[in-house]
Image (cartoon, rainbow over all chains, first blue to last red; front, side):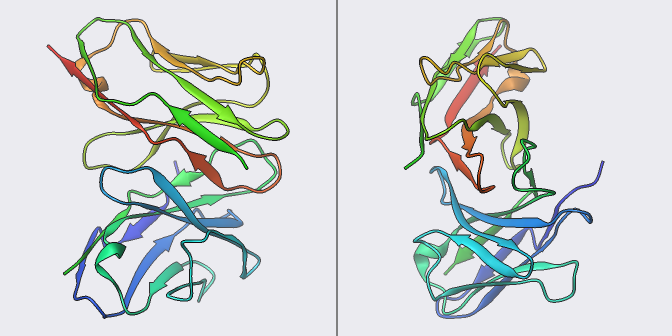
Length: 115
Length: 112
């Protein structure tokens, strides 16, 4: 069964540095998402992306964050000038159609640790 | 706005016990409802789903019924195993727009 893959599995970065988290969605999917889970807390929606533009974003997704689909297969989340509170598990998900009742497919996540 | 409320954990059970995790939601329209499971150190896996009122989702011995009248989607399993120890998340997806909204998650610990 096709999978969403995320790299790296664990990223350690100094505060203030930029970090890029990478995701390869399922190949025929059209809608892409990033979620965040701070340790011990709920999974929070960050952003959705369709047709090369952001379709929805949460209040968490401020100017520090950006997303891109640079080459038709990868889907990246960039965090500029990281802060300690950005430490979390970041999940990528994809979906073929947003109106369908099918579930999103999640990757295994990238654990981001900011020192 | 839409929201999901789950019972707080941890829930500690003995093997072969009956498990119920309560989930209620607030949403306009008719959302789809999901249960995801997160095993220790792993990502989110879909456990089951229901897309309309009175639908029953089931998988791996787990069941949940979409109850519109009580806006609930409680997860049940008749006889849990140690391998069911995980965090369980209830989630909803509105008809329009694909984002998932998650409950806080309920940790389940099953002891031998």
